[in-house]
Length: 484
Ligand code: GLN
Picture 1 (cartoon, protein in one colour):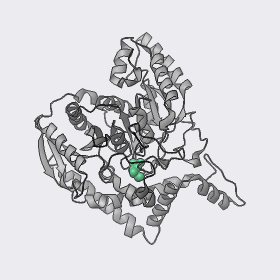
Picture 2 (spheres, helix red, strand yellow; picture 1 turned 135 degrees about the vertical axis):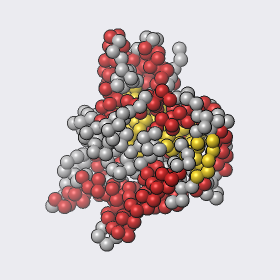
Picture 3 (cartoon, helix red, strand yellow; picture 1 turned 135 degrees about the horizontal axis):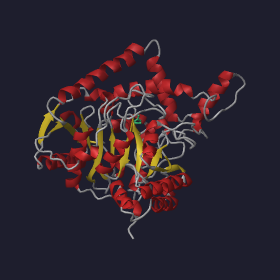
Picture 4 (cartoon, protein in one colour; picture 1 turned 180 degrees about the vertical axis):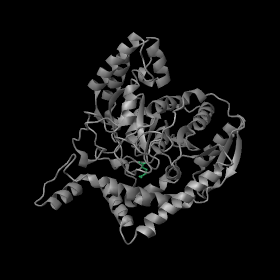
């Protein structure tokens, strides 16, 4: 018999409907694989009993013919999502033992669609990082590693590794500056950050509220389309969620892309861009062109400012959001003689180095003397970055770029440990999208000479995930990337 865990969500749904196997059998296949594959450190909490109970209910639904969109599909959930009755820590020591009394809207939507939850996935602490090395629970190992352990990317490293190693059928991720797309690229899977406002942020621990978005990470484009439809939708509990109909994203897959205008931004090809990546970028453009799409050259002139703007705004919002972890309300409490000592001791012990660095940078740029010079200035430049995209989209329908300037690097890489800015530079192709609130998908298109996956990014107009999906589907077909 074939390994059930290697089926895509679409394939599994079809087989479940045809009663080729039950949801319980599918879930057990994943549980067994999880037990035998702990070396990637993808899960920080396994919940087999929860998944099996949900699978039992799904089997009833199939029996009664009341099966829903994701009936019986076992998923992994990034530890940033609050899951009712299930420990949720954002992979931070400060949330030790925190068990939410509520379910995030996105995970509730997935449950309402009949999905089951195999466990909570590893991630960078509070989603701050690009390699999953800031997790309190240790780094995730990329399943594509051979001689030495490589990073899975971050912050949704556990989600990407779990999907690549078939430890779940699909996973949730969140993306503030690239955290769905970059780990997806590093692990050879597909992930989409939807338009800001498409998915509710309610119940997702906040990092930078004006940038955070949840999205699916899965084996292929179709699975992302299926998952996103279930995850998205208006939520009165998130004032930034948008009241718009959620399209059936799967319906556009396979549609003609003839005449579609694909924008190639010249600013994304700096001198010294990795030759293998730029080569694959050209090849991807040619593949779309041979299907009748038109390549247009566009400019995003404020691109050089995207990283500095992001690394001012994101820490500013983070420093404010993380003020709530005071040792009183959630998780860890380290006692002190006076109340202030309790706050100081808890936060000193509870937060890791990268989180503390961001809180300090954020507090600095928001402080009275520097607010105008840094934060207000960054907000102004953010507007210009957004306008760049608006102008570019007058000339094209979707933008094609690499997802990351590098492939997966080794765990503990000295240059990035010595200077965190070297890590931040890896976000150069992803952060602008969050600053502009746009949707963007990463899909694997090939391997580099080290045999590691490389991803391409498709950026769309606001609330036009459909054009992204249909373009990605065409590219996926032609690139014929072989999954792990
Ligand atoms: N790597 C980026 C950062 O460290 C993005 C993180 C994210 O999208 N959550 O902030």
